[in-house]
Length: 250
Image 1: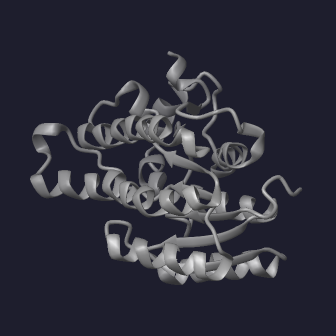
Image 2: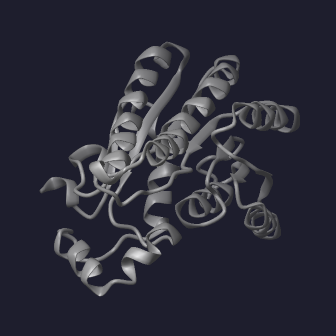
């Protein structure tokens, strides 16, 4: 308990799945958590659950592609708690389409949520962290950002870009004691993968490509987020943490 006591964390895409698990564990370990997601009702449920269990949380409906909403959320966080120590850029969408079947609208949507949304978060949180004397940024990428993925060109491109943006931030802002790392989940059971996993053949394919022969849970990712948010990882920046059961080792 208490591994991030006193820290203030913003977690996007936190209404369910990995983002909710991140928010819940950070709160359990002592952080004050800002829960954001476009699903407002579910945001309120997560906030209520955290506060009911003795944590501290506030929530916002949040379209991460809106720079104005990002500015508002960061401003309100600083107004309430005075700082931002941790940013978890978790919000994202998937798109299972081959490149030639992808429309310009498909491409723009994936890039705006998976990449530009995180960029806006970085842009508005980094100056606050500079004033704080440092912080930890955790960008949720994917194993597709490490190894590529068949049938998902735009998604793969967006997650590869998240990985490299992470490194650029680590280099540019390390002098300000701001750390920036990426997490690369493997095949995780979440609401976003529910449809895929309802196909037994797809589940078998996922398992056959995972050296540890099981699917991951959101809590597995949350443990990595907690480590990177805590001072235990104080000399780690610009790194990729693959939490994938060994998929990327192939």
